Length: 277
Image 1 (cartoon, rainbow, N blue to C red):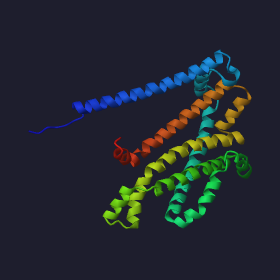
Image 2 (image 1 turned 180 degrees about the horizontal axis):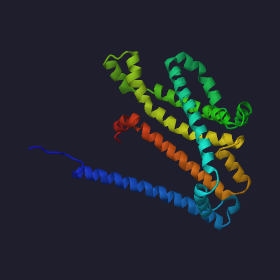
Image 3 (image 1 turned 135 degrees about the vertical axis):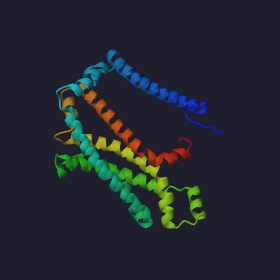
Image 4 (image 1 turned 90 degrees about the horizontal axis):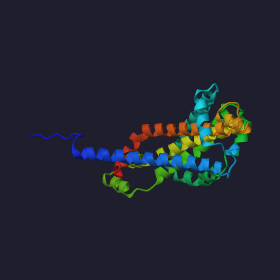
């Protein structure tokens, strides 16, 4: 007599129910936090702690948010321009950072030699150097891409090195036990263990890429979200300013979630090892 186990078994049903309840709780907390923020924002305006002219209002921002989606303005053109800058800078900066991290990992002497230089260069406020990028590369896309690369490169360099150099005694013991040579040790033990750290760096770098693009456009640009934000702030159109910020946050969050979806397969084993998969 054979017995088949399907996802209709009680154990599977209870697990699915637990996951649904957990997801529902998470979304309830998120909605409550957003509502709490909006309520505090409105209360601060009503009680006169802040002038609505300078901070806007929740209902005004809500209305402006939908107006900019369907209105005659060119907000989507600016979003597209900023997104292109973000993607190009992110790809170049993250690729160069990962490559540099691998090179430094393979050479301990080189890593020790350039470590102070990396720390010094990473400590430079790149946003404050944005006017120089504009001076060097002009008001076009090149200056913003250069600023993004300067931000993302060091994030990926440091996270890649951290992932490759972090000790794992279990992996070291297993590699020695099976007689793995240096190439096999790096390929099958060190690199896979570093993937979660590198993926986390990529998520952070994508967020930094959006920030760098907008900051570069604010400092000096002809198109993009940063240019529009500057114009709205100068015109005291705070509700539209806040609405555009909300739209930018939503787009950046969706971009990170898309990245997580495509990189989930790379870190699934890590989640399973921790008991989450």
